[in-house]
Each structure stands twice: as C-alpha cells, then as structure tokens.
Image (cartoon, rainbow, N blue to C red; front, side):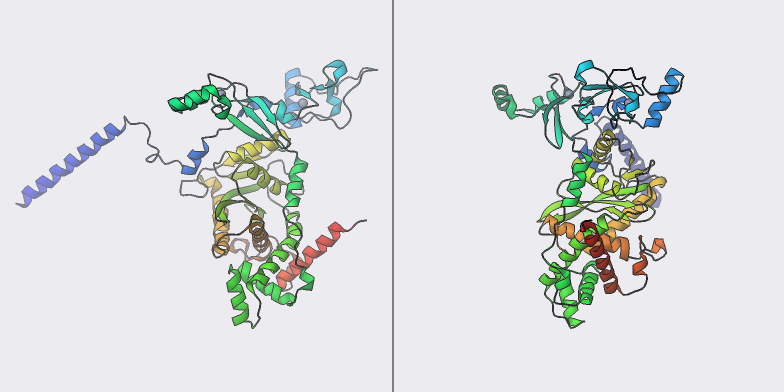
Length: 482
Ligand SMILES: [Zn+2]
Ligand SMILES: [Zn+2]
C-alpha cells in the first residue's frame, strides 16, 4: 500500500514538473511582463518623458581637454590668435562657452556684424546674442530630428518635434478615437501629439536669488519673547531633537517643567528660530568631500505629496540640500544641486553625485554643463529600495537610508504641514539639528560639523541658544553697511 502511494506521489511530482516546464515554454512566447521583470515602478514611469538628445561633442568641455585635443590634432603648441593691426577682436572677459577659452583665443567670424565668434581652440563658433543652451542642437529622442524652439521665456525654452513621421507623433495619433481625429483635423492646436519639452534656461544668478528669497523675516522677535531663552531652547529640543508634536511639546513643558506655554506660541518660536538660523546655516561654507549622494523623500503639504530633495556628504554626513518642492521635476533637481554647489568654498574638479534613476538629475546635470559647471552624476537604480546595489555605492545607500529614517522619525508626528513655507521652516530646524547638534555613532559620537562654541556645554537647550546667537551675529554682520 505504502509502495503504491509513494509511486503515485512521485508520478504526480513528475507530472507537476512537466506542467511547470510547459507553462514556462508557453510564457516565453508572451511579451516581457513588467511584473515578473521587476524594474523599479517609479523608474519605468520616468521613461514616458525622455530627454532631448544633445550630441556629445556639443556639450561643453574643460579648457585643458580642448587644449590637449587641439595640440594633438595640429601637432604644435597652442598659441593665442595673431592680432592684425586695425582689426577688432572680442573684448577681454569674453569666454568660449564650449571650451572656456579666454578672449586671446577668440576672433569675430562675421565681419562687421560682430555677432558671431570663432574659437581657435575648439574650432566652434558661437553667437553673442543667444544663450549657449539655445545654440546647442537638441534632437527628438524618438526620431532624432532637430527640435524646433517654439517659445522662449525668461527662465525656460520650449522645444517641439515638428517631424510628421516621428514615431511618437504617429503613436499618439493612433491612440485617438475616430471623433477625436475629426476634431484634430479641424483644430490641431487643441491637441498635443508631438514630442514637446521644456528646458530650464535661467542664469546662475537667478538661481542664487531664488535660494535667497525662500525665507522671509519672521514677525516674532526672539529678543523680545515673554519666556526665557532657556525655555525657547527647551521647546526646540523637544520639538526638533525628540521629534515631538507642538501639542506634546507644550504638554511636556507644562507637566514636567511647570512652564505654561501654548502650542501656537511654540509654533511661533520655531518659525522665528528657523528664519534666524536659515541664512547662517544655508550660507555656512563647509569643508565638503567631492562625494555627495541624494534622494527624494515625501512629506505632505496641505494634504498633497511634496518632495524633500535631500543631498548629503557621504563621508562627513553633512546635509547639503534639504529643501521641499511641490514638484519632482528638473527645476527641483537643478535647485537641489545648486544648493549643494554653493556650500563648497570652491567646486572641486572631481565632484560626484550618486542619485536614484530619475532622469531629472541628468537633465539638471546638462543644465549645469551648459553653464560650464562640471560634475559627475552616477545613477543607482534602487538606491532606496531592495534592488541589489553595487558594493561601491553601499555607503551612499546607507547614509541616505539612515538620514531618511531619522527624518521620518522627526516628521512622523507632525501630520504634514499647512504651508510650503512652514514645511521648509521645519527642514531648516531639522538640518541645523542634524548637522550641528546630533551625535552620530559612525562619527565617533560627534556631530557632522563640530563647532568650538558648542563644545563648552552638553546641555541641549543651551546649545540651541548658542546657535541662535551665532545666527544673530551672522545676520547683523551680513546686513551691516560699511
Ligand atoms: Zn572653444
Ligand atoms: Zn520626433
């Protein structure tokens, strides 16, 4: 009997294996199923809007590279352009936007008009009227035909693929119902079937002004508050360091410390502290490492999803970008990169960012490259999920994960924010805490930035007050007129 049963079981097993093989055989005829072939979901959705293509030799290069290429090609050392008497040459301060050659290597290319300059080093010509970003040829990622610049605004340009044979256009046309097709024939401008893309084009000065405008002065003057400075420090310690809500902070101050203070007053103090700390903290020039990592995390602002673009020094664990944006777009990535770049005393040549697979980072890198600001962007898909990540980027993955965890701990009880400004106020306090006050186990129980003025006390409310004094000194110095 046992023999018969074991025979039947083994027969069933063989049958099951055959069935599985047959199933696999059948499945191999199906198109690639995205669910059994797990690329990150978020990553796939990015593929909907591919970037326009710029030929690699159109993208700016460093002067040293261009000089080496010139000398190799002509087999002689590079010399400035020979200046003929009586001829006009580009003025001092003119720089080739492609290779960075200075005015000695430049000459006018179109005689009297003087609107086109030729560079001896990279042998490219450029216009003095249009921005370099507008002079670069952008191609459609679907059909490789040149895109047409259809609109130019103060901070961005809009490009469109006009090719009637473009695969993207054809595919979009196919999706239309019969009725929509009729409507399209009557009024093509009501439909957007062609590939269209927005290219951010503002100057670096404009970016700087955006950074500075974010926080306006607070209505609360911390020098005139009714409670002592120590109470202010205590409130900040509970609200930021211990991640308590405003109401719990008020409760603990009353029940443990016998201090009666409303949660609204604590909110006002926190806002005033944030506004005072922001210019000092954000303009702090750090000794940063050229290895930075970045990631987006979510918060809720008025019930909507908003994005924190965290960037962090991998070795020193200093947060270098912490702003919240309502959109996860190229501008947010550009602004986040810029906020890191301005924290360096000098942007290092080997600067590298490790970020997730979102193409906005590549678009942002291209924006800076066209402004001759060079850095590397390494995209690791699955920087924050469970996909296998190469060993090389594990430190970046770990630091970002830890930062996200610490942030979520402080943020979890806040139940979202009522305004974007309020959300950014909290980010400023959180970053001040993370960079200057929080001891990290991996840094030998020291904060990422060790200030001498903080070493004299272990008391956290006092530490907050020392930082507020530093920030006040910075504010007075920076607004003083000489
Ligand atoms: Zn050049
Ligand atoms: Zn096209």
